[in-house]
Amino acid sequence: MGKRRQLFAFIQKEFRHIFRDRRSMMILLGMPIIQIILFGFAISNELKNVSVAVFDPSNDPATQRIIHRIDASEYFSVNFFTQHPKEMETLFQEGKAELEILFVDGFEKRLHHTGDAAIQLLADATDPNQASMMVGYASNIITACASEWMEEYHIPIHIVPEVRMLYNPSMKSAFNFVPGVMGLILMLLCAMMTSIAIVREKEMGTMEVLLASPMKPGAVIFSKVIPYFTLSVVNLITILLLAVFVLGVPVSGSLFWLTIVSFLFIAVALSLGILISTIVDTQVAAMLISGMALMVPVMLLSGMIFPVENMPQILQLISHIVPAKWYIRAVKVLMIEGLPVIYVAKELAILTLMALLLTTVSLKKFKIRLN
Image (cartoon, rainbow, N blue to C red):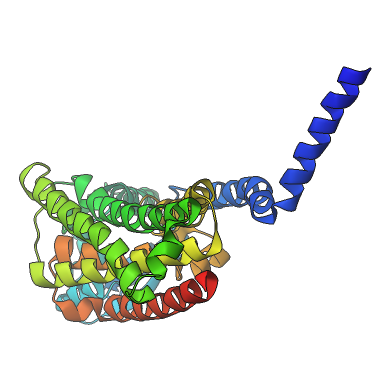
């Protein structure tokens, strides 16, 4: 009986120790809930509300039937009608359209006379899987319309859409995952390792010694993050070299602006690492929070693997505060699509604001915490 009571006493003590640590309780009980929600709703390869632009010079009943069928589909939403094919390129560059449909002039007349009429499908292939599904679903809708016309007109109808994959004509998956991997590596290296390094100093009691030196607290933190900034730059160079010379992914746009955007993202990640170090007191807690609060959102809510547009509205709103989302978007525009920096002005502004805000908050909280 004595040994049993002793065992129960130890078990009771352990439960009390766990319940006293509120942060550990939040991680233990909150992480499964957050992850099942994110994985349940975010992981989806289905198409939803793909933005479609249409060029329809004939504007006849046949083209209207196809447009209506595509717009009525749960996969597509026809948002733009252009007057000239050149306007299509602008919509792609501004990220307003993901699929574009161009009808030949006199579409219905050609169907009646020859049983054949031309349709061109242009898809943004920076995400090859998404582009393939978009083209496949749109082609199936067009084929279904052609079958209906064969029954109505009693003539053979043959419509085979001409497909063009923009920005990634070879349909290499590397074009999609390289920007995402850049965001994930830089975020984990900068934020997770910086937070762990600073918390380790606090655990060992050496941080107070450093702050008691003539150096100002800001200079101490600066000295801690510079090595990780340097390692991140080395990793950035390595990733770009491997992407270009091994994976065949070109840097189509400005290397200078790609570097500036990457430096801004690194600054954001370093600031997040400092902020995490002010919240926790152990390296294990720093690693868990970094993994839950940074790694999971980067993988699921940044567009790295799954399109954000396919997610529920609430997750789309949450994704706006994930820095990696804006970085990955900017990298795709500059590196893959090769567009001028003006097309990533929004992403640059958001990352700059995040860097300034997080740096200010993390440094102030750090001083307060350790004083």
